[in-house]
Amino acid sequence: MSYLTIQEAMKLTGKSESTFRNLARKLKASRSKEIKLEKLKTGHEKILFKESFINSYFDTSSKGSSKQVESEASASINERTLAILERELEEKNRQIEALTDRLKESNLLQAQLHEQVKLLEAPKKKKRWFG
Image 1 (cartoon, helix red, strand yellow):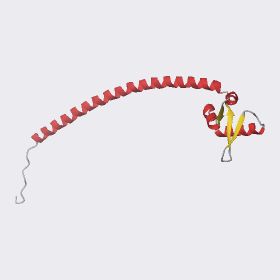
Image 2 (cartoon, rainbow, N blue to C red):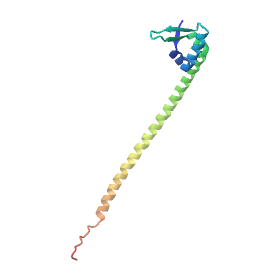
Image 3 (tube, rainbow, N blue to C red):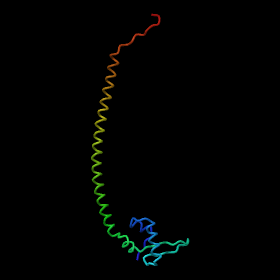
Image 4 (cartoon, helix red, strand yellow):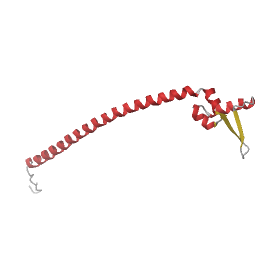
């Protein structure tokens, strides 16, 4: 017969610690055999629940299968989402590459234009102060 601590029962069912402490208080008062209390050296009690009791009380058998279906569905969705994102990333990379090429061309044209403007400007004569 296996017993579960409160932490293990919380992981199994998804319920809070206070839920299990309240349940333990009720079972302790009714002197149920579904709970086992172990004395620790510190003077506190370790609360242990029968695994079969937790499974039947919280009906974890159906939750386990629904969680499995949910995880399979989310895995399928994650795979599709990943494929979509990979395609978008490839397209963005192509766009960035094209824009980078255009920017290089633009810089080259600006440099050529700047050189032509320099050639067209005539040298200015210095003005003298004495007229």
